[in-house]
Image 1: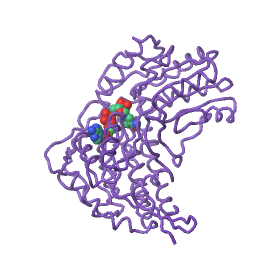
Image 2: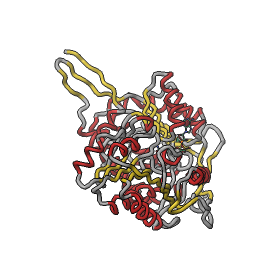
Image 3: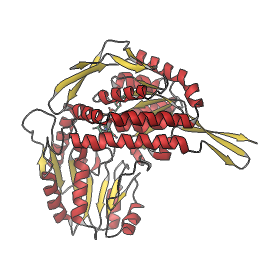
Image 4: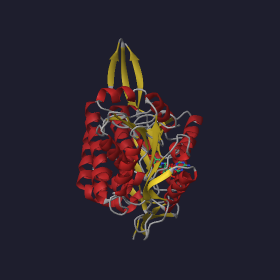
Length: 464
Ligand code: NAD
């Protein structure tokens, strides 16, 4: 077991101000694999001061040089991609192939995109007799969750650095090891001291101190709606900028005329990936009443192929495992029908949950309204297109979704009626440059690509 006793502040690894530690547990075998320091308000304060001190120099660094540093960071992350995948598998429990393809692969693509954007983005524009400057917002406090631990770090830190901001990162307590690896890569990439700082620690202590710190100009948070609300309230009280990426309960709408077998197979895979711990997962499958029975059979058969410990990993911790099993029990109690999986425990160690498919789900049930964050799919039946729109839009969330139809134009016309930030048409591919973020209570702001960069910029107009 590795005992880490330092945090990355002002360009070097320093001991924490307090003595507390956080245990990192491998969720597949429940063994403690490492400890990291539990940072305190004093550590956050030191990191914010370092970030403030580094801000003028980094903000004044020409974008082309910032691009060079981001390209060097991409190079270091690429060189350590296997280590990244192994680390995420150890602390999150994701199957190694998924860690390689997604947990390491996606952040590499996003980091490369911001090296390119820093080089090419128009940080100045002309509007009539004005020159408009797009300037960095300042010091960013980034608070990230554990479900895509490196992706969520890179999706904040890379655009912030491209924009000329400096950053203090407080990663999730369950997955601090890949955050440490990222800090090492930042250091190896020659990014100047203080531009990026890492404080590991507990949410209500280090996270809260960072969100409330007067030296932070923008808080960028990804995680639960409950914590997002608190952070939004704190930021509002101080007229501080805030970006929130929160939960989802996204709909996968299969219209008549779609390739049902493909739509159901891709839909089930989407929910089971990362053990269902994906904010944009299509956790509600909406099927026309004429195809509903067939879709239920297809979904149950597809889910049975997700064998825990092989194609699907454990949940991140015992609390999440208990929470997800609780939702499965709630679904049964409310009259939904389990056609695959169920709440029963699996043999052996690890925080596993059976991949579960519910049929006969009605829109008002808890399992059709709330984010479960586990491998649980709800199948709902609709009468006609208007009914499908009503059900799809009938939650407080609006992060993602999918539409399947006989042709793209029909699916896209339906997608225009959805209150949600992203929709995949007939299995459209993930695009790391497309804006990602929520309608309604799924959040405020957008990440990725040029839209993600503008979150870290503010404008100044010079009139001539
Ligand atoms: P969380 O919101 O508690 O944690 C996310 C991050 O916020 C972590 O870094 C945590 O340390 C920090 N945090 C916690 N309390 C804080 C506070 N008071 N002030 C500042 N920072 C704080 O999420 P969780 O408890 O790990 O997961 C619970 C649920 O949240 C999940 O079941 C899921 O529904 C949802 N979730 C959503 C996402 C997403 O990507 N949208 C990610 C993780 C979790």
